[in-house]
Amino acid sequence: MKKVAFYTLGCKVNQYETEAMLEMFEKEGYTQVDSEEFADVYVINTCTVTHMSDRKSRQYIRRMKKKNPDAIIAVVGCYSQVSPEEILEIEEVNLVMGTNERRQIVEEIKKIDSSQKASTVDDIMKVRAFEEIEISQSNGRTRAFMKIQDGCDRFCSYCIIPYARGGKVRSRNKESILEEVQKLASNGYKEIVLTGIHVASYGKDLKDEQMTLLSVIKEINEVEEIERIRLSSVEPVLFTDEFVNEVSKMPKVCPHYHLSLQSGCDETLKRMNRRYTTTEYKEIVDRLRENIPNVAITTDVIVGFPGETNDEFNKTYEFLRDIELSQMHIFKYSPRKGTPAATMDNQIDPQMKQFRSDKLLNLNKENFNKFASKFVGQELDVLFEQSVEQNRYEGLTSNYIRVVVETDKDIQGQILKTKILDVKNEYVEGVLV
Image 1: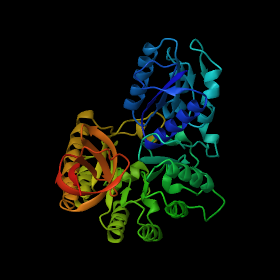
Image 2: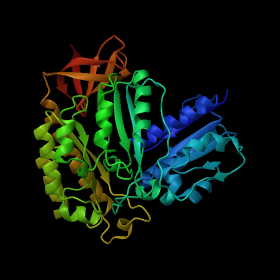
Image 3: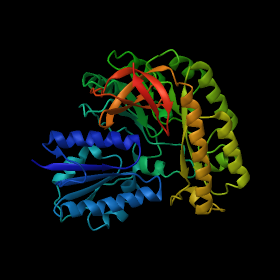
Image 4: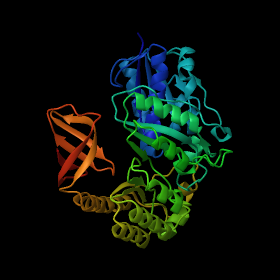
């Protein structure tokens, strides 16, 4: 029996697409093995958000060929979409595929051997239809990521993603979404995480005006076996009064929103081509907090964007200190060739980027501690995902607090009432009630 191994970099969308490709291989008789083991086919699903992700992809490609010199190395995803020639020049690579032809991966593998090279990458900017791939099997996880949208037409000045995923929004048909939800529910999944490249734009390319993200959430909410619905990273534009009011009435919708910010300074946001101000962002945060009890709001922040002065960074720091988001992901700006920001004046020194990153990371620890401390002594429902060490399991509350408990029982996949005892670094300790 042939063996296939996957190595996935990047976002939740990539994770979903890897799971979908795995099912395609399994239907053709392949067995999955760990990426560090001997395999007949290695698939590297790449990311290209930063230079570091490109480098990791190249390093892993070379490592895999050493595991089995006769293996076929297939490179797919965002890096291969943006730089197919660069990847094909790597000696170890056999097949290069982009971000819109994953359904053909097994067939393309059949066409070549380990001494040949091929590329199927096409012009992603011409793609208008959502590529239908799906997950149906249970793989031991408790949360299922579900891709409902692809492409982004926002063109933020720092971002390579529209060039990797396409500059047109492509939404998945609602019937296809609900069919997959039913399959996942029957396989024991309790939480669905709706994900995409720009989830907030779901439906704008569809002719049916009733086909909105809110309508999709409402229908998933009716699936009895699904107990939680969560959104992945979303843009502030989504959170209208109507949207917040409606989701606040649906207890299955997790009170956790990853609300992209990128900068807490209006001047920086303008150079980034972000289409909101800090005032508008704060209004949305306030709206969520007023309507949804115990809501967690997390975000992404880029430091060291071209032209970011000390004054601009201080505005970002003060803004984030004042609104006290529960968690922040901090990124140091990485120039991406082909984006407007890469050629902007006043690029920031790496040491300054590190200083600003460290300062926000310290603030993040303070903010998480403040948020999580509110729940010490309370009993919260926790969906336990995995064993982290002997007799210790970790899981998530609906508002995205990671909880670790001690137990000699197998509680993976269960939602259990848990008393919060103590706040640690990025997680809390609890005890089963």
